[in-house]
Length: 540
Image 1 (tube, rainbow, N blue to C red):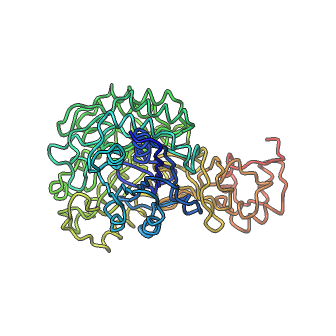
Image 2: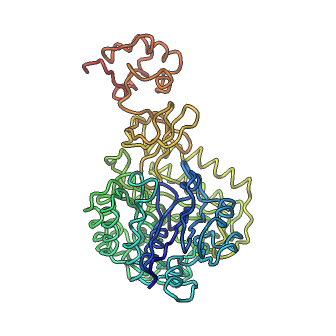
Image 3: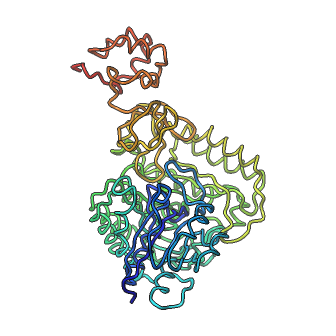
């Protein structure tokens, strides 16, 4: 066992389908690396790329581990994963022998490290620190559970601790569809039959995090949460509602501020509606509202479905979307529905043609036309992680498809998920863009909220929705005191504008809501503000 060894863990953030690590998330992979080092007897100092960007120096250490890489490129609000240029500049400053993990281990910069590990950098680090050969391997189940407990403490060193930090928990690795090879683009089926962590072990990890001060948890790291605990490896597998209930009732008992989930296979929900209904009811009851169950459609084109051995057909997707809406559509304390579907679409899969975009648009319009709600439609190009794909993505066609979805589907969905007047609770203000403040609730795939005036960053406010963009909503902080708010803020109220805002400011203070009628000469606009604005000197 290694003694008195110092390990520097540099979190450059990962963003993978099964692991979120860009703030406000801290990835389970980072915590497992810390746990493996601690298990080998080392002291661990954890720093993030944002800390280094802010001027902090890499820790003095005997071993330096960098975790970085994004396999699902996205748009980020406050931060982003370490770039290749940043990694290249950082590496000469690291002390001791060096290991890089995450998808950055496959980058050209990885050659600057002593070891580059894609499979499981925690297991590789542990082997190297305990005198074994450093190679690619998966951790055992015992190591997995032990390391997640031993590595929990690094959360207190994250810049977002305790709020709005979200710790992601893993439930299992592998895929129930491993016998058929699973989806052509996904590496999880290559890991074989699912290796399940027990509800008790997962809850124990959550308890350790909560004892340190963590309040927000996302249950991720699985191909299908509805299939958690199932020992059936049919395609699709029969779900186990008892196992899911045991896990989420245990997590709910911790009294978390946020408890959200990740992916689900629509084919499982469609094939086993009774068991799936029980599981969806568990998620709606035990998790916090605003929860999103991401469904892997990938493509609605039958030819692409067959050629890539995809999860589900469009009909199976429709079954799943309907059932999730039925069970989870009620609005919860956060202001959002308790549980809604998300839909993942991947472009560039083998067999795709120009007609594929029409198939995909058709199923999305069908969902919209039925009056159903979808919280998030994620459209991306395939990443060649498992194989090279022969299809060349038509850049113009891809762009037109995304624009059509944003304009014809997304905005309508936003208006259903968050109708005008919806009060979104505890929106964290994150960045200023000119005179606009952008914020989000803490949680999985939170709505981006634009406030048309400056609000203190880092503060949290309840926000009333007053409009929608293609991918965000516009809102005002509530209570909104007309007697004290600046004119720039009053201009942002629905139906007001500059002229009415000027009249409102000149007529202050107001003693009652009806006193505003002279300044707001539009009765409909005035009534729209009832319940949104307040008057500090009013008795009502």
